[in-house]
Image 1 (tube, rainbow, N blue to C red):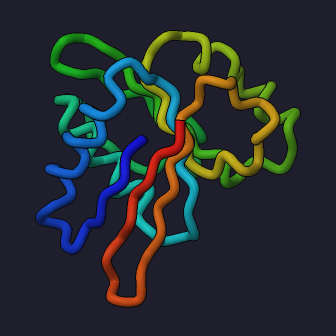
Image 2: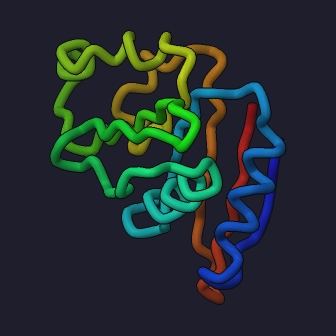
Length: 139
């Protein structure tokens, strides 16, 4: 379990590092939060802390982006925002990603909730009145 507040973008990489340290064995993360709350921004920071060599972008249109780290590990960044039904997740081959043993960062998991494996770490990101973000993981 992890909980932190981000007061500015200057802190985000530090928080991302602490988040990864809190989840050393976890590989599947489902990010929940309203549109524009910073899910993709936080995932970018996680990827930076994991030394991704690729350009990290939102997979909203491609649905899945695959990134490589300097030590040749793979990270899957999946966005289910544009999926209309569970069948589209099957067509995407979600099972291959979830069972790969590699990191999977999932945005808009609400749309495929029933397909998430029990080992998924649910991560809530919410914006507070003073514009800070609260990031909280539930294992």
